[in-house]
Structure formats: structure tokens, C-alpha cells
Image (cartoon, rainbow, N blue to C red; front, top):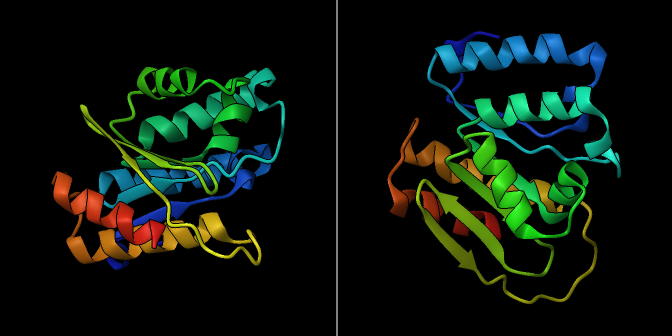
Length: 168
């Protein structure tokens, strides 16, 4: 990967923590960090009891600690922490030193943490046809707006605009 060609790196696959992939992908992440490329991580967890696997959980923590922005679903956080309690999720994020994160919750509110500020976004109710790709569509809207805003912007208004683009 030529870092000169990138402004944002998105990793959104459970496969990124698998043994056969982790070393190569973590090298890509390190290159992104060194070249000040925005790194957005979406754990996209499929293993319902991930919290019981210390090795895989350690890899998730590595990505959380490395990311500029973590975008996770409530389902991801439940599988990572073993809890449905969002205060446990927020503690996990704090323990990983995640400054900016987004937790989506299907048709429920979207929780946003931007450094010390926290926000809840209501999700517009729409006629549901399928939820397939909903998280990816959110990430696409978020990343599209982040790309427009510019590299490593920590401006709260810009970040919230990017989140709202993900929701819509």
C-alpha cells in the first residue's frame, strides 16, 4: 500500500483479528499511523463469545487503541465485553484510550463520544426492507464526509456532521 494514495483506512472485518491475517493488517495499520492517515475501525464481530478469547480480544484492543475513530454496533460491544450494559462498553473504550467512537444500535439512538463530549443522535424511522449492509452504509457515509473534511480533523462540528452523514 502506498500511503501517499490514502487519506483514510477503514478496517471493518472480523477477519482482521484472525491469526492468519492479523500480522499483515497490523503492519498496514502501523503504516497508516506513521503517515497520519485517518484510521477508522469497525470490529464487525461475529463470534458471540469473543470476550472469552483473550488472544482475539487483545487484537480487538490493539485496533481500538490504534484507531482515530471506532465505529461499533451495540451487538459488537456486547460480544466484545460480554455485557448488554452500555456503561461497561464505555469503560472498555476508556480502557483502550479511544477518544472518538460511535456506537450504533439498529433502529435505536446512535451514541457518539468525541473526546470529553457525548451525544445521542435519534435515528429516523424508515420502512425496513433489509438490514443487510446497514452498518457498512453508515460507515460509508461517515468516511465520505471525513474524507471531505480533511485528514485528522478533531473539530467537533465537523465530526458530528460526519456522524449525521452516516445516519442518513
